[in-house]
Amino acid sequence: MRPVFAILALLVLIQPSVAAERLNGEAIKRAFDGNTVSGRYTNGGFFTEYHEPDGRALGHNGWQPNKDACWITKEDQVCYYYGPPSDRTVHCFTVELTDRLYVLRNVSNGQINALATIEPGNPRGHSDKGEPWYCDGLISRAPDVPMSRRRLASR
Image 1 (cartoon, one colour):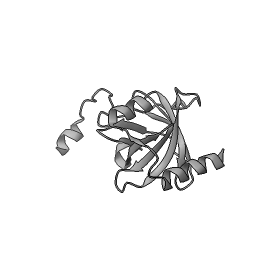
Image 2 (cartoon, one colour; image 1 turned 30 degrees about the vertical axis):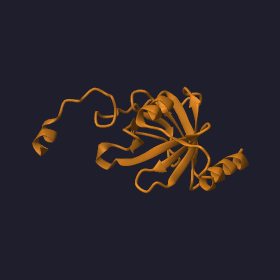
Image 3 (cartoon, helix red, strand yellow; image 1 turned 180 degrees about the horizontal axis):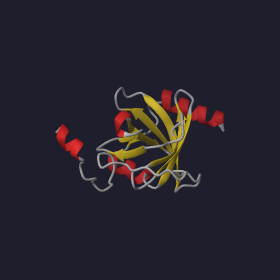
Image 4 (spheres, one colour; image 1 turned 135 degrees about the horizontal axis):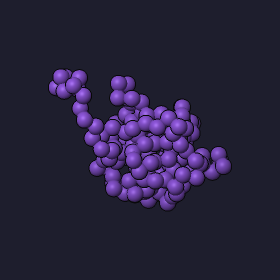
C-alpha cells in the first residue's frame, strides 16, 4: 500500500493540473463530522482520528494517542487543538479534495502537511479509553461553562 500512497503523494505534489476542489468550512464539516480521517504526514508519520460530533478528536495524531484533542471548522479551514488550555497547541489546515484523497495544507504557509482518506463512522474503534475530556466552548459546540471567579478577575 505504501507505493500507491507514494504515487498519489507525488501526483498531488507535481501535478498542479490535477483537478482539486478546495473545500469550505461547511464542506469540511460534512466530510469529517462523525467519520475517521486517516493519512500520512509529508514527513512520514501516520495519523488516524475519529471526529466526534461533540468536537473531540479521538485516536492518534501521529506522535501520541490523543488526549484533550478537539477539532472545529472555520470559514475555510479545519483546526485541531491538542492539550489542555494551559499549554494547548493549535494546527489549522485548508482542505482540498482530489477524487477521494484529501490534501491538508498549513494555513500559515500553504505547504502540504498531510494526505488523508476518510472512512465512514469509527471503524477503528477510536475512543477516549475511559478518560473523557471536554472540548471547551472556545473550540466546540459544547455548552458554555460558567466562568470561575479567577477568570472573571483576570478580565
